Image: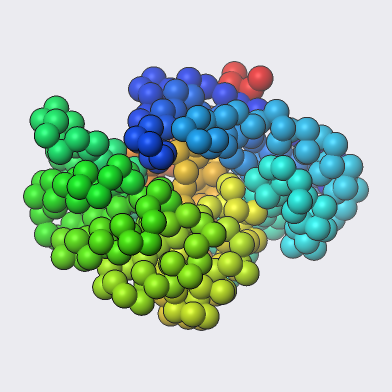
Length: 388
């Protein structure tokens, strides 16, 4: 039950269809993703088990999307591997604290910790022969409701081609079984309002609509937009302000009826500050970025204490390994509303193609894999095709 090796594989593949409006950026620039990059962590043990995890392999810099996989791999090779080789993997949370102390001030440190943490949970689950959600206390759900994310909003309310594209995307997703949709907004007050109106007209009143503003608005504009969104029956208004404007998030939550959501406050201490002031309504946490399952579970427990909703975030860079791990977290959370459902997952080369048996998504629900650990078997031969 000792850790004997820690490997990091930087996997980078082009997207068949470049994704635009992942999140907006200031001055009307949109971020365009033409590739997916993930860092896959593999931890091997003395008793013959292998645990897998995923770290994010990209970072935003203004309107650009940067590759950070090689930097993450260096941290794994130079810091993580020497620190935990020879340690007992059953002590995964002790190891998390040890690594957190070392990595917290390092560039990409939290991201690397996320992948290592998931791999340790996977290793422990495989050794014990039980899925991670049971290690986390049990499963409240076997099938996790997904929302389709992120459906690109329109940038010009007079552009009929953009409007038609939005309508067609929503109809296609509705036909796949999705009943909840997150619009990629932050494209201007008028454009965002029109995107939501078009979405509501397209999917009807029985479906849920969320808007992600990507942190681009100031408080006055966020208040103005929020009042329009609540009139349109929007489920939540996500990341309306820059992350450091905690007071602004509190004010929005107090003054608006629409739920205010955040996926940009990754630390439990940040979430606790907001919860204690009743300053947030929905919290999203990502196991591939925010420090792993250990941190996301802690944040979920805080939200449950304050009787607000928790949602499992899954970024556009998600691999099947990260998605499976996310499902186990989702299953263990009593106050879960949704897991983020990536609309391009079926076309992702790092999705089901790297598994021996696919994750099952039907009618807008993800089936929690029941095997030990993260519940899936990685096809390492397929994975290594994309490794740099």
